Amino acid sequence: MSAVIVVHGGAWAIPNDLAEASVDGVKASAREGFAVLQKNGTALDAVESAVRALEDNTVFNAGHGATLNTDGEVEMDALIMDGKTLACGAVSSVKNIANPVSLARAVMEKTAHVMLTDSGANQFAQTIGVVAVPTDKLVTSYEMKEWEKHKNYVTGVMEDFNTLWPHDTVGAVAVDYAGNVACATSTGGIRNKMVGRVGDSSTVGCGGYADNFSGAVSCTGHGESILKVTLARLILSHVEQGKSVEEASRISLQYMGERVRGAGGVIIVTPMAQWASTFTTERMAWAAVEEDVLYYGLEPHEKQREHLS
Ligand code: GLY
Image (cartoon, rainbow, N blue to C red; front, top):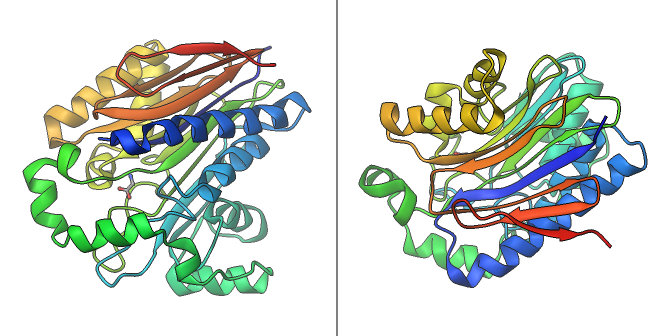
């Protein structure tokens, strides 16, 4: 049985000045997640560790580096799911949290609920001893400048989501040596979103899903479109019907484009360690580790490889 991790840093029109840092960031995250698997860690531990690394990297829109809403606040969404038991945890619209993915895991493991939102999620964080981080520590000067530039989210999305409206999310999927799969997704959401807007990333079956009977998926892209087509579950339903991971990802993203004009990207792994990374935006930084090889890419159909030292 092989262990594999795949991560993404968000599907969007990544500008050239962020390209190298984005690729370096996903490569480092995939290495970190794979190191957990190599030590016989679970897929759940591996995806949490990989996503934490992306949340800590200010290049990505999650944790440190998250985008701002219309009030100039950071509101983040995250989800984690264990394919062995279908246990899942999520947080939405949380503020002042460095690693929403770990808070989502705490919701899964320490409460009787699946999702906590807004002030309730923050209260829970406080009760379990998660240290609050001031908003200005999460916001980068890059984000402040971009936020000032883009004041009208709704018009922008209608005009052209992919090219005009920078947007991304981070995520990871993994299968461990026991054949268990897991997924995790985390985001600051769409820049200039309405206060209280929740996208796909914390919604089970949309921004991610994991089930040992089919596989694990993490999604990125236009949240409202992903929600409308329940993208993660849609992909896995194609896998259940016998489609390959590449085909299931491709036809589901194509359907989302045709049906609701949404662009995005997905990563998937199955319990048999088949994996794929697919997107319909201009670019998506992704990386995967399978045994001793690191794969990565940014442009459509790009798949570079290097041996792990
Ligand atoms: N895909 C992340 C979001 O739309 O919030």
